[in-house]
Amino acid sequence: MMVTDPVCLMEINKEEVKFVSEYRGQTYYFDSERCKQEFDDSPDEFVGTIPEKVYGDHGERFDGSE
Image 1 (cartoon, rainbow, N blue to C red):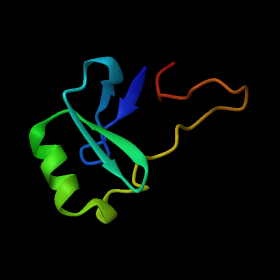
Image 2: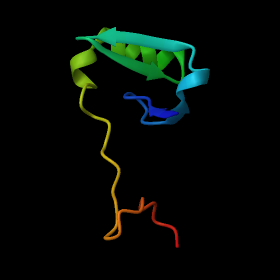
Image 3: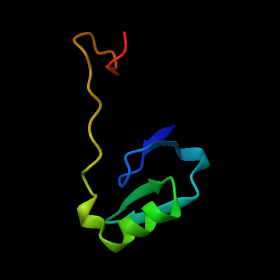
Image 4: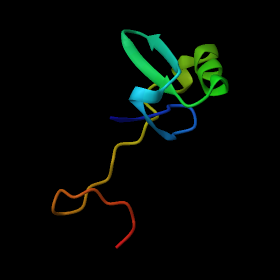
């Protein structure tokens, strides 16, 4: 399962993540120690920053390619 690092917005495999933080009952995953540290220092700056996926008219994920 892919998850998004809330600091750098990189998609990462949840099964391979080494850096994890808990904040207000939610688990956050990070691709690097630097991202985890930045989040831990100021979590409110990053909570809610993961953009929602954009879907086309037919419910398919839109990634800009054709």
